[in-house]
Each structure stands twice: as structure tokens, then as C-alpha cells.
Image (cartoon, rainbow, N blue to C red; front, side, top):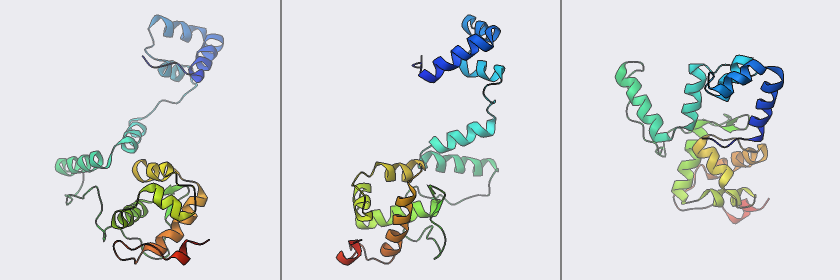
Length: 183
């Protein structure tokens, strides 16, 4: 059974005071979950299948997404696709010059592919990239943005845009010039 959070306690208290009949049904098991009780009370919206699919897609790994797309193509729901590798090739998904790298605080898929390509080519970790961007070498936010499409601070996105321009034409194993690292 899931651990009760403070929010759950607040929801239960609200049900008890404002909707005693729904609260009683929840306690007796007529309503199977707190979420269902909140939906019945009108305190939370009913999640649609589309909402659930989007949530599952965001939680899926790249391999799971590739497998799902292959399955969809096999079922005829999508045109047949060539197997797209989870790790992009250096020529794949290169952004045209002048296009944005993010939508709000979220990196675009082409940007993620470009960052991963540069990181693989230069053998960089997310910590190394953050250090080159001029931030403390805590690469967890960048790693989450690259793997789980998590949001980034706008200052990190702005620095990434400059970093991508600097690293676009570098030879494998080459890093930026020492002058480029000075802010």
C-alpha cells in the first residue's frame, strides 16, 4: 500500500467534512481509491485514456518508445518505419541554424540528439557539460532533461545554446578552446 502523504490527508479531511457520504463509501471499500473518491466528489478531473497514454509515454525509456513505435507500425497504425536507434547517429536530427533549442523550459528532441552526439563524441558526462557551461558540476538536471525530458532553468538553456554553437564543428576528442571557456 502506498505511503500516505500530507496532501492525501488533506483530501481525506476535505472529503470527511464536505462529502461525508463519499468519505464513508471510501472507508467501506465501495469506492476503491482516494483518487476515484475525489473524482466522484468533483475535486479532481477524470483522467482520459489520452492522459494516461501521455503519462506512460513520458515515463517510458527510449528503447520502450522505439519498441512501441515499431509495434504501431506492425499493426498498421503508423507507416512502416526503419528501426531508429535509441542513440542517435552523428548526422541524425541536426538542427538547422537559427532554430530554437527548447520549447519553454524543455529541450526539443533534435536538441537532445545533438547534445548526446556531442557528449558521446567528446566523451563528456553531464557534469562535464555543466562545468563547461559555467555552472556547478552537478549534471543531474541535465541528465534528467536528456533522458526523461525534464525541464531546465532558462539560464542553462541559454548557456546550452551557446555551447551547442561552439561544439557544432569540433573534431572527435577536441574540446573548446581555453578562450571559449572564459565568460
